Length: 252
Image 1 (tube, one colour):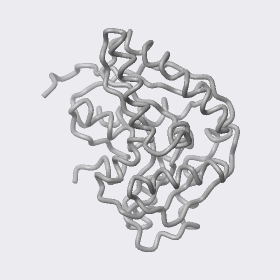
Image 2 (image 1 turned 60 degrees about the vertical axis):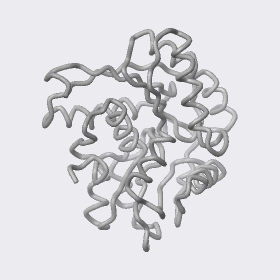
Image 3 (image 1 turned 90 degrees about the vertical axis):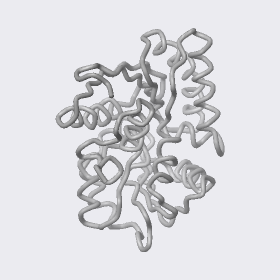
Image 4 (image 1 turned 135 degrees about the vertical axis):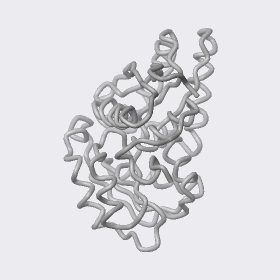
């Protein structure tokens, strides 16, 4: 057990235009602070990206090593890479490749730091939930959304249905109503699914919708931000509990 009021430093590798990761993940962990003694601080390094296109995502991802080294300078205890589509658009299994590259860069800097990614967190969390079949909402253009679908299915999880909102500008993604997924999910075929992914993107806000969808559908509901929070807590060896995070972050 960690002593009360010990601050745990969390590093966030963030696309330069992303404003949601630094909103939803801290919101979940600050809600956790209301019921458990652990305390958290958040430290970011940014990679340039304005439009969600494959080419711009690749350029951004190439810059992630710099971010990992900068954050390791601060001796953060875990780093979370927050761009699911940047990872999934680079090929099957790339989250493992990316996490190793970033970890190795920290080792070379003399400060080894565990790495999680929103891409790896989503698939790993779905496995932890026992989910074999999901339906999901994505903000991306259809070609990128199909890459995300293919990636998730390559990890042994069937995507029964998906919605592509086709928003390319990343600030417009962030500007979406966080309560919108609580209505959008009704347009998905969720027959027989084990989980609903309310937002397969850490930039598209959805936190207020997670428990609303669960209540209305009776189906466990997750988002990339919820999954990343779950992996951060597991990496820190803390109970993966946070109010407002739905089934995955509940006291089961």
